[in-house]
Length: 329
Image (cartoon, rainbow, N blue to C red):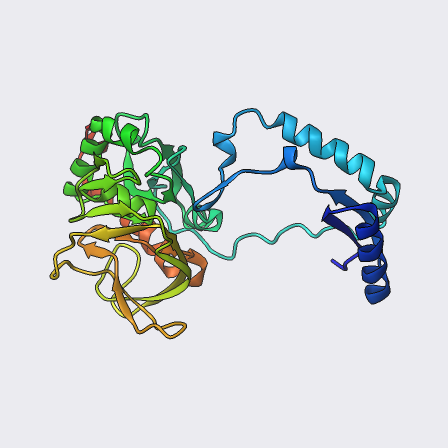
């Protein structure tokens, strides 16, 4: 869609707005339709990994109402509506080019609560496109995995903020250990990796017992450990990638994974970037894959297809009632 105009944000004064407006309109030939002044009461709070998630902020209506009032006062709504009415109709998104494999829809259990909320939604959509049914579970509150779980996906988030609650949910931690021991494919990234270690050491130095599927422990640091895009090459076969295959994603974390044995089976080789050499990353053994890298599944859709296929195989591998029994822990 063509660019129709501009709205300035965090304007300092009427004079500031007038100068910015004139500069933009002279440079582009397009209209500036308003300028939102700075408003401390409408700021969205941040912490070490970015914005505080909406789910933790409680009632958002005061924020939304305040923003609506500010827009009404500071923007030319009539002009914005006129531009909107003259816009071309949006094309409907094309159907997915991926045909799901024949067979039953396997259940992929996805950890989603206040502690685990960092996911590429594209990843979940791609898993659905390949035939998976996505069911959420809460490591904070649920005693077991969802019934009929065929694979487990634990994304990133803030396990360090909720470490006492995660440690206190011993039934779910036990359910995860039993499920992975029974052969369920399990993929964890960043916060998920931290959760699967033996323990999490928070910023105050307190130790909290975690799942114990990975060696070593996660330690929160004051300084950021890594930030940036990453290309990984699989070192061994995993539930997502085969040895030698590549995928792309990103890293953003303040914790470090420590106490890892030198002979621990590493998942990836992270390709060199910005003066860094190649380095090993993550953990991979059998049906378990964990790493600090958030993979974007569309960088190599084969890994999503393979994860769904691994979950589907669990349907045939278990006897009657086996999945429900395993899920009930």
